[in-house]
Length: 228
Image (tube, rainbow, N blue to C red; front, side):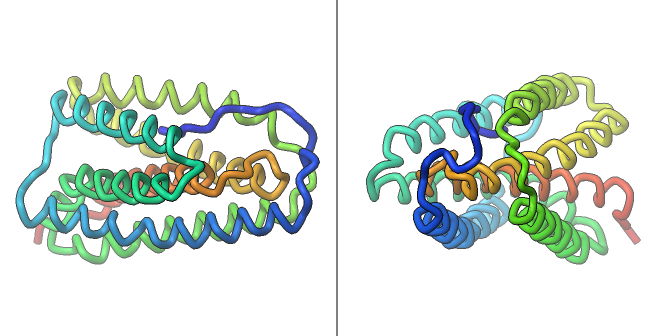
């Protein structure tokens, strides 16, 4: 999932460098803040057992996520947008609690979660570093990544009913690649001035991180999980 809408144009977009750096700084701060309600949401899901799986879980997840993203888009130019975004990240943490609970049921579950977190942080660091040194305009990459994300959503929906472990592995690997590239693309857009709203930028990067973390955790659970 990613809310990015491609806007064509040359790098720079006529936005002063000082403004671009301000947007990026605010984006990073809000992104860091968004991790708190995500953790609280995951903890709430684990503590209360409010987790949904299968077709109903997918419907609730997609319906809730798109409703929140619509609300964020409508409020992104006011302080309400920050509150709605943080509520969305709590919801995403709640939806993630099912996978986290499954992994924690393994004897090495806690270490797998920390490994997935460290791996996601590593991907973010690499993509942010690349975005700061790449001079080429990457705006044309957005439409291809968007198509890839749609294919992933369809594939994941089909696999919910098929229940194929191999299918889950393939989807997870593809998701890590696509959303890592999305991370590079979204950070580069802010640096180039293609995105000047830090709430929208935070939403895009949060979804990138969420999908990379979730996919890494699923893979680690499949390959590295231990029930000893």
